[in-house]
Amino acid sequence: MKKAGEQTDPLGTVWNLIDQGQLWGAATVLAHSRSHVLLRDLMAVSDVVVLFASAMLASWLRFGTFIPTDHLLMPAFAAPLFYMAAMMVLRGYHTLDPQTLQMGLLRLCCAQAISFALLLGIAYFSKVSDDFSRLWTGYFAIIGVASLILLRLCAFGAIRALGKQKSFRPKIVLISSNPTPSILEMLEQRIGSQHQYRIIHRSIINGGKTGTADLQAELNKIRALAPDMIILAISQSDRARFADQLDDIDAISADILEVGDLTSHMSPCAPDHDLLLEPGREWIVMAGLPFIRRAMRPFGQRGWWIKRAEDVILGLIAVIIAAPVMLAVAFAIKLTSAGPVLYVQKRHGFNGETIRVLKFRSMYVDQCATKRDDTVPQATRNDPRITPVGKFIRKTSLDELPQLFNVLRGDMSLVGPRPHATQHNTAYRTRIDGYFARHRVKPGITGWAQVNGWRGETDTDEKMRQRVLHDMYYIANWSPILDVRVLTLTIATFFKQKNAH
Image (tube, rainbow, N blue to C red; front, side, top):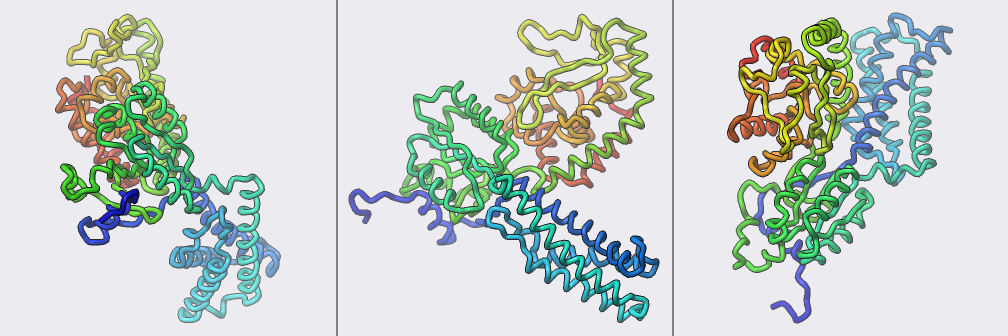
């Protein structure tokens, strides 16, 4: 029996359930901040550049020219690739940590040795080793490893000199209910003691004292902090009271973990004890503590910068190709109706923030204004507000072309959930479960929902629900290949948009 005054550890209760095999699927999560992942990727790219530069310097020392001779070009390119492969096997980049000055110098030297061993081994067995210059190979190996070590020392030295080493630790926000302060203290103690994490903000929902407006202001502050992870420890009563506001958390692009109202699970006879054992819940372990994963950060560890590079490169190409078409559309709009060529509409974008989306104006100027109740009527078939030119550019989606500049500016992506008007978001957020989760990524000019037929007027909740479900599928299954597929289908159906009006 529990002694008088003894406090029960609710997290320990869940841990015991996992330990006893009553909770299945518990996995360990290793959180990394986006800046940490970017550092590792930049170091990998820099290593390849440095090694190739070392090959050129070795060529200059041996032959008096920076360009390696023809028979040495292949080794000059192969050695950096072998080095990268060896570093991945040795997890040489994964262990980089500016906070603890883990530069991985031993792994670096081992990877360099392995790469040259592979290079010379392949040359020997393919009987081309006689073409190798032994002096060039020696210069290449020595200069390469010295340059890699110097690069590490300079990079980590600069980070510490600028005092930025803590910025590479994952940023964590804690949100707790006042009835369970012990859980918040426990989280701070256990997570805060881990050097690889950084708690940047704490919020307490204080029972009857916290109002809806106060919680909304707190969520706006959390959104501005751009955390890598949000941990929720909220009572069931507060979950019900602030359900609409807590749904906004789903719009934040972060890993979202839940502790839940564990005080109600202390007794096996508690009415909601079975919630702990509910099938389908994904349990993970972080800092030695068990959590329910509510949402995973979209695009994985490095997908966000891969997608951004994809948007910039393909966006620039698209702007160049579409420039004559955009000029022709702009001229036609100006010639056939009075008013500006472009129409700017406020919409919710990444993290639920308001963005200004560009479109070619397709309606008469006096019909573009919102109603007095601040709603924007969706366009319907044979809508009298649409101009003759507007009908054509909406049917062919040419009115969306100016959004390429939103993509280059970083407000939007080429592929993603279509941005809805802010008034539409207000209307649907309480009618469609998980609606706001589509804002965990940047909105797109086209999307998985659009190429699957869910484009145009959403005059029923079911149509909007299907659009949201397709958006959620895209976010959960994103890959560059999926983006290419969506773009290809968009171009293939360019003049066959049946639902566009």
